[in-house]
Amino acid sequence: MGGSDSAGARGRGRRGRRGGADGTQGLDRRRAANGTQGPDPHRATDKAQERDRRRATNSTQGPDPHRATNSTQGPDPHRATDKAQERDRRRAAKGTQGRDPRGATDKAQGPDPHRATNGTQGRDRRAAVVGALMLVMALAALDATIVSTAVPQIVGALGGFSVFSWLFSGYLLAATVTLPVYGKLSDTFGRKPVLIAGSALFLAGSALCALAWDMGSLIAFRVLQGLGGGALQGTVQTLAADLYPLKERPKIQARLSTVWAASAVAGPAIGGLLTAYAHWRWIFLINLPIGALALWLIVRHLHEPARQRPPRAPVDWAGALAVFAAGGALLTALVQGGVAWDWLSAPSLALFATGLGCAGAVVVIERRAADPVIPGWVWRRRTIAAVNLALGSLGLLMVAPTVFLPTYAQSVLHLAPIAAGFVLSVMTLSWPVSAALSQHVYRRIGFRDTAVLGISAAACVLFAFPLLPYPGSAWQPALLMLLLGAALGLFQLPLIVGVQSTVGWAERGTTTASVLFCRQIGQTVGAAVFGAVANAVLSARLGGSGSLDSVARSLEDPGAVAHPERLRRAVDAAVDAVYVGAGCAAVGCLLVLLFLAPRRFPVLQDQPPPPTPSRDAPDPPLSRN
Image (cartoon, rainbow, N blue to C red; front, side):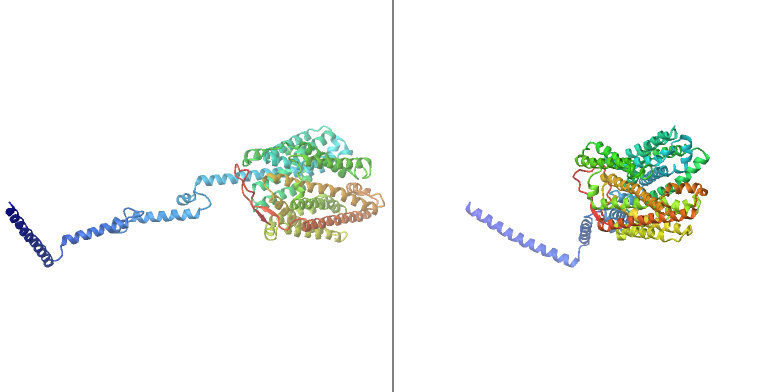
């Protein structure tokens, strides 16, 4: 058994060695054969195909899975189109970053007709609102002067010659003392409800004036009309600032100034035409269709954005009544003093005492009120306080041309009433043009310096009036009025636009009403002061028997004047004294602007408020102008 196993193992060993030698020799023979036969074409083809597959796989890792096929088949026209579209989309996306997230799609697909329609509708709606504001402003300005030429017919029909001056004073007083109240209400409840309520009150007063049965009822209805007129004046100016950003406000303010000036000048002429060819009651009836159209446009097209306001404090009705009482007493004393009674008479002293007492009550009530009608910040902030005083000076100096120039033109220059009105009306030609162009000035040098430039020029014009030759020609005062209008347009508009731009929406109505209230007060004070100055000069020149009333009567009946040349020179001296006083008011205004107003107004940048802003949202950033 052991021998056979060893013999078998030796046999297997020999076979294994022979098999290994045979395998080595076989491999060598195949290598030699391959070397002599050359490369295998099938193998080369397989390697090339494998290499192509690898390249195709590497090149197609990315955006396009068909890139390997495209690279082997040549350029693909569809691929070029896709690249162009992708490039257009990227350019559109870059151009709309930070504006409208839909901009890229809009640019790729072309203009959106729905968006264009919405923009056009928005512009049309704003244009309709502006038209309504201009109509409302025209009504408020017309009714301040339209009654003047109809007084003889009204007195002839209703009587009451001794109190007819209250047809003007009642309207003026009511419109003036309600300005602060309406300004606060517009900040509290919104501009639209205040404007609608004021328009309705104004139209109701106009209708009742047309139905008046005696002078007392007509005066009462004129006061009611003035209560509505106060809402029209302040709210229109505030809405103009709400509708337009700072860059576009000069245009709308210039339009409103043009409407106001043209209506105020055209008021007496329109009143005369209606009285001569229709009836004096049409002076008030004409307001109804115009006011109804304006009211319809406001209701239909004025849509204020929703604003989330803090919890509303109770309306300060006690403060409103105190303001009304104080303003009414003081303005009545100023308007009627020296006309209906002497300045030192019992009625004048009683009215002044009552007005001062009510003013003290206003201060006490407003300090305790949670939401006062006249907040203290309208006088604590330098910018608003300076503009209040400056516009008050404007109302003061405007009395000289508007009240005394027509008398000068008729008595000294012997012009007819229409020609005398033209001498004054040339001021309304340059005022709106200068106001519209003032934006190019205040954008360079600021609001305050532009106003300083305007009031300095106005002071020079006012002081130049007494230097006119006697008797002179009509073109000389007309030229001065043209220059005065240009100077005052450069003065007033930058101040109004500037002060409105320093406050937000919730304070703009109060601020605008405060400025207009001071201007009306200045005009009332100017009429009283300059009337007293003119009467004093006339009395001194005519030996104690002259007054403005005697001058007015002499114009109606020139033959009744004993010494016409003497009266003529006296009127010339009186008007010269008034213009000197107006020039002093302009100098005072200049000092206020230089020493009280900041050189650069703290303007709030225009940022349209969101529909529901957060209470913790930061205040809008400030810029200096």
